[in-house]
Amino acid sequence: MEVQVSPETAKKLNDLAASSGRAPEEIVEDALAGYLKEVASIRKTLDSRYDDLKSGRVKLVDGEEAFRRLREKSERRRSGG
Image 1: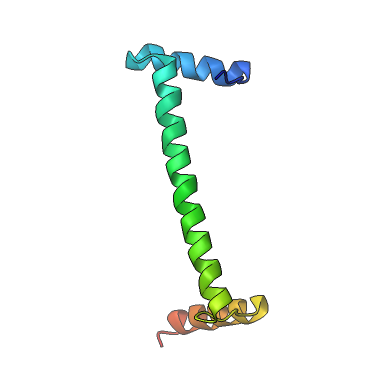
Image 2 (image 1 turned 30 degrees about the horizontal axis):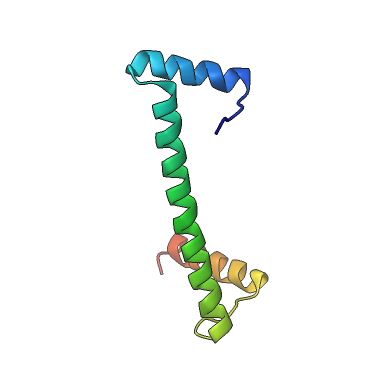
């Protein structure tokens, strides 16, 4: 597989490779593997949250209500209560 990157990204990759003594391909492989692991983790979390909502274990909170609660919490902290 080939990946096309901008000239700026290629320069950064080559500079990092030169300074680290690693091949650019190794750096790209490590970066992509880490990214895919993170995406899979986020997907798992989102699926779990969706399942919680769908099953009724978790209830939605209106956005305005959520902001109101946060404002009240901040005000209590500032007032020492």
